[in-house]
Amino acid sequence: MTVLEAMERICARYGVVAEPPDPASKLGLSRLARTEVPIYGARHRVEGGTCGWYIWAGEWSDDVDFFEPTHVLHLAETCPLALGFLGLPPGWRFLSDGEYHDVWFDPSLLEVE
Image 1: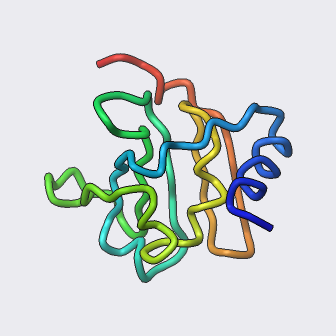
Image 2: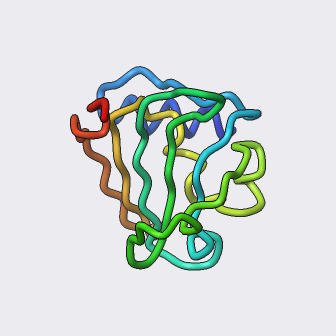
Image 3: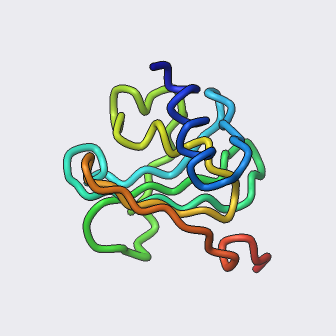
């Protein structure tokens, strides 16, 4: 199964149309998401060359260095577990350890600050 097919399958399971990010766009990835599970993901609005995704593992931090800008195309190497979830549109969250998955809509992600 291709990554795009995995994205479409996950989106279909939750009744949403897949909105895969541009592979050249950036997302925020925590250092721990490269090596630890579970991973968490939250997709905000797409803007300014970003796809809106923030992916992390471990305890959340408001530290300015918690997320590293990462191109989507590098996730196959750095955090492959997240790939199938990236088609979820803005406003969606996920949690996965590779076997257990939880996906839900969170309207607060769409609020403009």
